[in-house]
Image (tube, rainbow, N blue to C red; front, side, top):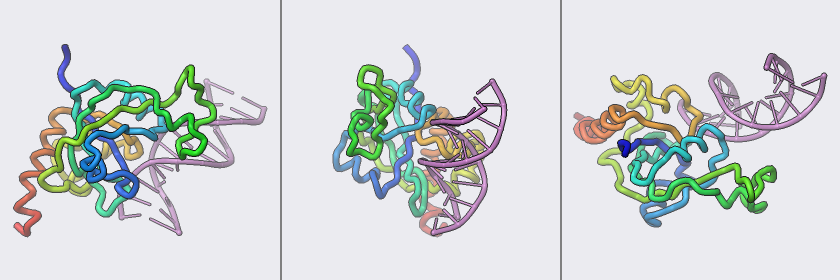
Length: 161
DNA sequence: GCCAACGTTGGC
DNA sequence: GCCAACGTTGGC
């Protein structure tokens, strides 16, 4: 029995936002086409928690929390020629790309923008700040806690001190 | 829309 | 196995 792990997963809100996930409750996190990100998907366990990060947005940052409810399984969009993520080199008998299913848990008390994460002591080693292009990444427990504190402690500041 | 950073592909 | 060319991500 091992401790629960924490993750961060990026999505462009124009394509799929935290609010979209809230409406559907559970969704498949498909479309990942990067090996490092896929390997992280494969390491996820049911019950793990993940931050929902809004990328290519204004502003970018962490919007909420979700839970992994189904562990990695083949992403069907890789076999569908009409899909953006179609991968002709991936064969059904040996699928190259996986997805997990996630469940909406909650929105953060306050959206935590990327700028703020950059300046927060204790987050210097966060993957988000050092490997900007990785869309599925691990988060250390202390980092997770700091982000949660940011979401709360920042409330006064967000209201203008 | 631009561009930096980085991942992937393919020629050799 | 190296590396140049190319493609993609993602912040701004």
